[in-house]
Each structure stands twice: as structure tokens, then as C-alpha cells.
Length: 159
Length: 128
Image (cartoon, rainbow over all chains, first blue to last red; front, side, top):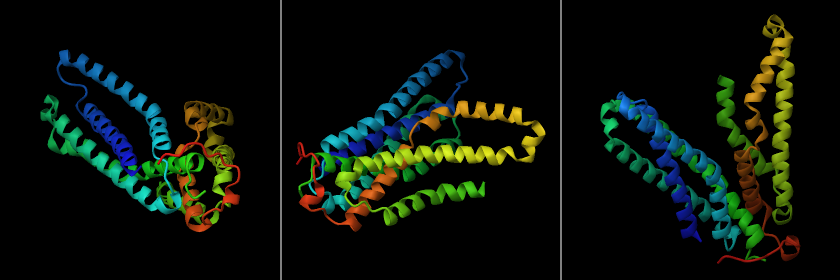
């Protein structure tokens, strides 16, 4: 159960942060100076907007459902501390992976070279790091609620 | 601005703390649906009451007297229109936070329920 919970939380945190970094990067370098590349960037931004909207609507439902159906605790009264720990650590780890990969990928893109290092840090890394510290709380409340409801409706070995 | 900041940072602690210490459910297994409905319903009531009080209080402001009540109401109508989506959607973050606080309060302060306490809660499949 804990392995599945960790994988779900880690995956969603990773995707969330990767999208966050990539969208911050697009905002930072948009619009590019060359006319021919302008259209390509508009297309990229549109695709990203669609992914972001889809993720914001589907992400939460999927996250709650996956935890609800796959991570029913055997005994919530005994395991609640471990569940909280797993959610918090997995979310922080997923966020860190997403953040690192996002920065590595966006730094390798051609337009990143045109941006000043200070601007890049100010626009991408600082807000994302702040988000990285705050986000696990939201994730914890959502995950723990799903676990509790799953235990109430589907499980409960103490019965 | 200071008030806003104070509210922004103290709200989660206060909401979580007050719920945890004052609202321990008697039986989470029986009451969880009522709890969810109560949190969402109370959220809407709070939004409506806060908006109404805010409107009443600001309508007495001197600036409103200067621009005229009709213009002010027009301004409010436009503002509400643009924020209708936020207003109509339930505050999910509050729901998750409050439900977690209640669950933890029940687990730590309410005690383990007996077989009779759990009552008619349906037990279908259990994922082990």
C-alpha cells in the first residue's frame, strides 16, 4: 500500500513541477525575437495551455481516485503517521525531480542561453522553490482525505 | 495589506487547530457524509454572508457617496460577474484541510470505534 501511495504522490508531484517549470520558461522567453520562431512559440504555448487546463481539471480527480481505489489502509488508527510521512516525503521528492529535470531541459533549449542567469533564477527557480515548500501540505490534505474515505468505505480491519 | 497577510498566514493554522481541538466527531464512520456536506455548505454560507456584509459596509463608504450608488452597484455587478466561477466553485482546499483535521482529531482524540459504533457502514472489498 505504501509503495503504491508513494508512486502516485511522486508521479503527480513530478508532473506538476515539470509543467510549472516549463510554463515559467515559456513565459520568460516569450515572445522570441525572430519572426519565424514566433509562430512556433505560439503553438508551444497553446499546447502547454491545453495540457495545463487538462491537468488542473483531471489531475485532482485522478489523484484522489487512484489513492482511494489503490491505497486503502489496513488500519488507519495505527498507520496514520506513516501515511502522512509517505505523502510528505514522496511529494517533496517528486517535486525535486520535476524541478531538476525541468531546469535541466529548459536550460538546454536554445533560448535559455539568451536569458541572463539572474533573470532565469528570479523568474523560474525562486517561485518554483516557494511552491515546492508549500505544495506538500495541499497534497497531504488531499491524499489523507482520500485514504480516510477509502478506509471508511472500503476497508477497516479493526471491524 | 498587513491584515491580508496576517489572515493569509494564520488562516490554515487557525482553521486546522480549531477544527482539530473543537470538532472531534463522535463517529467518523457514520458521520463522514454529513461532515463533508456541512463543510461545503458552511463554506458557501460564509462566502454569501461575507459578500453581503462587505457590500453593505462599503456602500456607506465616502467614495461610494461621491461616485453615486448606481455606479457603485454597476461596478459590484461587473466584479461579481468576473468572479462568479470562483464564487460558485466549492472551496476544495478548505474541505480537504478540515476533513484531514477531523480525521486526525477522531483518530487521536476520539478513540477506536467498537463494532457496534461503526454500525451499518458498508464494507465491500478491502485492498490488502
